Amino acid sequence: MKNDQYFRLNATMMANDSILTLIEELGMEGYGIYIALLGELRQRDDYTCAASSLPALARRWNTGVETVRQVVNNFGLFVPGTDNISFSSSYLNEVMRRLEEKRRQGATGRSVRTVTAQRAANGRFTAANRTEEKSIAEKREKRGEEEPTPASYDLELPPLQAQRSANSVNHWEQYIDEAFADRSWLEVAAMHSGMGLRFAERLPEITAFFKQHVRTYGKEATVGTTEDAKCYFSNFVRPASPTRKALDAELARTDCKHREENPYRYEERDPATGLRSYCGLPIPNEAPPRPNACAVWDGARRQWGR
Image 1 (spheres, rainbow, N blue to C red):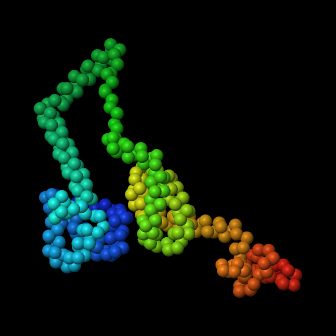
Image 2 (cartoon, rainbow, N blue to C red):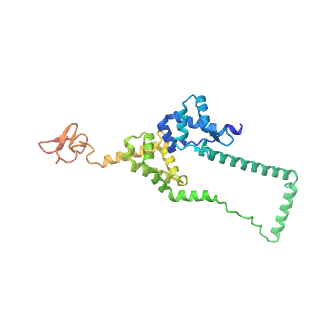
Image 3 (cartoon, one colour):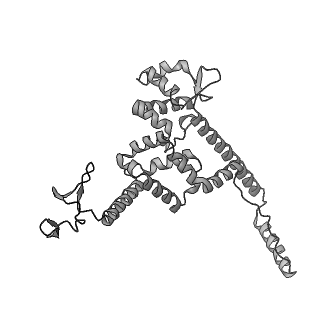
């Protein structure tokens, strides 16, 4: 495969705020145009494209040029060039930077393997060498000398990565709280969750369960920014996902517990007037809670019976 035929596509991309807004306004057509533009930029040597090329691209993709311009200009997904007549993608630039860095590391690894093979071919790692090393070790043992301790090296994360990891462990709950304070993002997340009004009504419980999930599965280090928290939560409440099923089960369990603890669970109450009833029959205000689903109010004896 040629190097210009692929690039990495983040699986959680659709949880990004800008992408969600794009889909909200232009539908999946807008998202498809965005991916097509990334592919077009990938084929350019400098990963930039002239704005004057948009009409031709729109004709090639059988879509409107104004729609393509909206995707480029309105959602913060592309960066205008210094000349203001071209544009690029910060996402693609970062992806390609990492890919090119990995290629350079791979080339270095191949060079090391080549040198090792040449040394072996030159006889530096032969049976005779191993026999000589064994003989030296036996002599050292007879003299009571200890085997030299090889030098040890501390393997540390690069400074930025170490700082990010430490911040994630220490501040992940803060990032989640900051994400949930963004009301516009929260409304979009609620719509995509498909939970309707239940999302707003049960938000404190949903938030607590989400934090408990992060803590239980040791995912604190993955929540290193507010954006990480948003992406993680969007996938967490995605319909039909395992985490969403676990959330629904937890909310259902809580509902059942609340019903069992509610002494008026066998009655209906008018939200406007507060009047109590059962099976369409009124219940006097002074009556005690209905004890079970079969109980009938005895007006003469002023008590519940069967």
